[in-house]
Length: 157
Figure 1: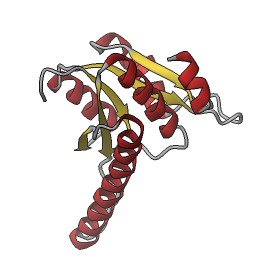
Figure 2 (figure 1 turned 90 degrees about the vertical axis):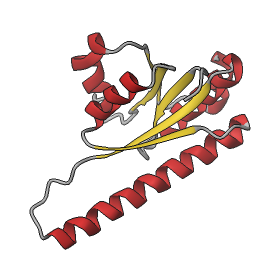
Figure 3 (figure 1 turned 180 degrees about the vertical axis):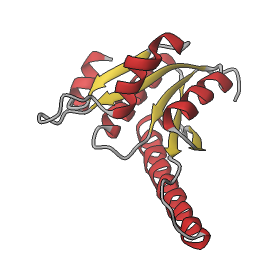
């Protein structure tokens, strides 16, 4: 990465993902920061033959690449700039922390909270970071309500 400052967004294909991306794009346009999008492939937790495991890993990688491309297109349409992309394999939180340790130019993480009225859980990444990892992070976490409209985001950024 260059000397540019980056906003990190996790692409997880959740219904809130576009809200986080929209917020990051709006902040990017206002601050001149670039965007990096990361997605994570969790380790497989199945007992099966090597051939089946290899197929499952390849399918997971293809799905992750599709999510990254979709998110990258969204950012490029909104900002005119193609974002940096990171695809990592391993435990999401561990890999996210490692990415933050490696890429010192990332200076904010944007996540959108789950808005399911039947769930009090804002999402697994937010829950883990806020309850277990907040004192171990070197950057702020921007948690955006997942139900914000793009118009509302434009007004508040």
